[in-house]
Structures are given as C-alpha cells and as structure tokens.
Length: 203
Image (cartoon, rainbow, N blue to C red; front, side, top):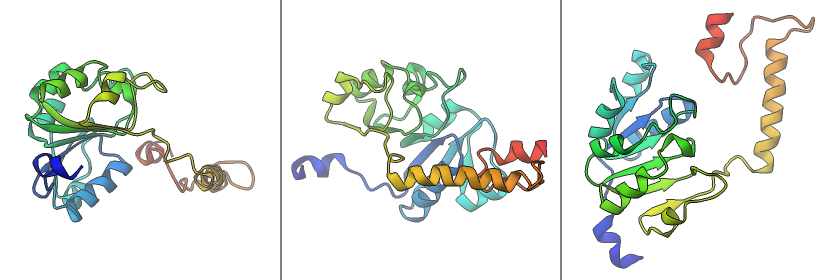
C-alpha cells in the first residue's frame, strides 16, 4: 500500500469538488470539504440554492451539468433516481470531465450509465471511483470490482438498529407535529421535512 501511495494520492486542498444535487446531505459534505479540506465548492442542481446558502458555503453555481463536470477535480453525486436522472452521467459526461478526475456515487447506481465508467476508468480519463451504489444492485459489476482504482462499498449506513428505531420514531414525531389532537392539520411544519419548500407552498 505504501509503495504506490505517493504517486497516486493528492492533497485535496484547493481542488474543486463538483456536487451534482445540492440537498441537505450534500450541503453538509460541502461544508466539511470547504472547512476541513480547503476545497472549492461548485454545484449543479435544477433548482439554484438561495443566495445565502451559496454565500455560506462559498459555492459557485453552474447552470448546466457539463459545465460543472468540466471544472471539477472530484465529482460527487447526490441526486434521486428518476426518468430525468437515469444515465445522467454517461459517455458524453465523462468526455467533458478533466483528465484524471475522480467520481463518487452515493446516490443511486443507475444515475451513472452502466458501461461508461468502466471505459473512463480503463482509459485513465477518470483516475479513480468510489461507488456506494451499483447499477444492478445487489449484484456488483465484476469489472469494477477487479479494478485497483475503484473502491466499492455496500450502501448500508442506515442499517444500524438505532438508526432504524430513529426512522420510526421521527416518522411518528412528524405525524404528531403536523396532525393536531382533533385529527386536523395543525399548521405546524414537520420536524424532519423531506422537501421543506414544497411543504411551505402547500400550507
């Protein structure tokens, strides 16, 4: 391990982390990357974050995905899987990335096209990948698993007993917060809203 580390590892300070999807989790990531690692934060999302959020994170908004991919040293994915995001990172996306960029996917496996990352990793266009999700879960690509520049994990951070208890406990707290004692809407927002903006618009 110590033999090759000096030639393949870089201090991330001053490098650009490109965040696809600036939600609650990726905001925390951005804060840590900026504060602890001294990284530059760039992001792309279909909804631009409020000005104060961008200012707090010192984050640069990119108006389209390829613009973000072209400037990022590290690309990290934080977007749901739907008909618009399936295959979002594809051959065309990898082609515009910086040579030697790194890809991190903790979102959903099918956000990344099935074969494109294999080609990009083999060619050296992408120097490394960290994948917490997989295209054909629970099956894992044998080609990716065999690559020394790929780290695969199993997306199980929510599997702890206390975490599962908290899922149920917080769901009940949200219900009690939103539904009054008479069974009618109380007017109060949930404690842990999934999409606070949508809730505010509908209430």
